[in-house]
Length: 171
Image: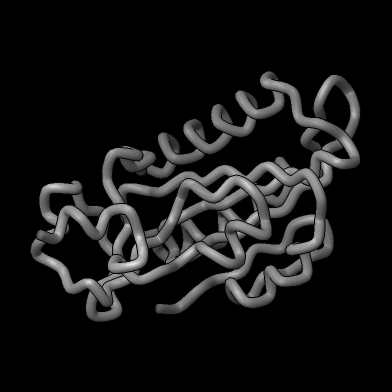
């Protein structure tokens, strides 16, 4: 489970544990973009550069947004906005979605369906539908993309399937 880093606004996230720097940030909004396939090395470099440029120029109603990014498992793009400084309006969030969607299209990638759950089994991440969860172990890890604050993201990003609401689908 190699985790890659993305430099955005002077912070470098080498792994999920380095996010503890932001746990105490108030009023954060976190959004995730799961990709249909893993990034290759070239795509990762291009994404790191272009996402950094986007986030460094990202504004809401003409006011710069304090934001951070993370690429996890070469397949999930996570962006956080610290809204205690500048709230991100709907247009700013739409611009982020358009940027990621456009970038994916240029790279021949798609954003994965949110109806599929990212699950780590035997050190391999895959996206699975609910009905297939019965084929996995209760100790396999779910990547929780429903986290909307840094604290929640840091504390609950990965948890065993048996510790989630999805556990009922194993029976």
